[in-house]
Length: 258
Image (tube, rainbow, N blue to C red; front, top):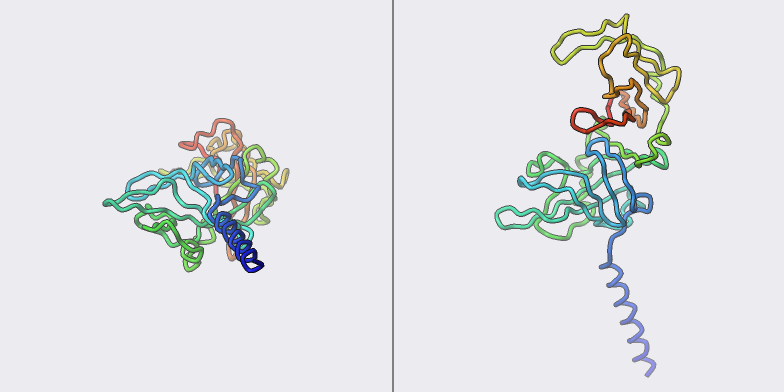
């Protein structure tokens, strides 16, 4: 009788474990039910377990909806891992896209990330891995043999907290500058002795004097952008944020990389 009781207890525990493992993958709390701005993809919306707005194509089909795939990957390795919803179909075969974001926290309201996967020709050269199977392991999805170059970092800023995400501009630009503006047609529109680019007044803000040079910088009609992220190695790369109210993500944009 005792042996039977023990067997039943163990069987019950195993059943509970299997149900738990097959349950819904949850995103980190900081992303759940919130909206974020992506420097590459625009506005993203998160639920407890999905992300929408991160648009790409594969086999000439559009994808913008993603589902959390491996829970706790952020706590363990700093990864956010998603699978595409729905699958894409090519020659009758269903393919699932898998995306691995390697995140680094900048502030409580901002992160920068890299996509950890080689570029894929079937994905319009995006770093998304596609498979015929609905299962994949973390080492395959997050292929560390090919990570984006240092200067190709992406920024995520939580919507409504852009002011709190500001950072000091990097040391090489903590000064006041004259600059020359070269148009895409090769014509010089502003001479360096006339234009003014100021950072000293507010170390988190780059201000351009449009009276001296009326050419738009950083897509900002007001002439101000905020520094939000910096990556440095042999060179320094930094991202600025345009807080104008009339940004359309077609001809004007939120983010510019210097």
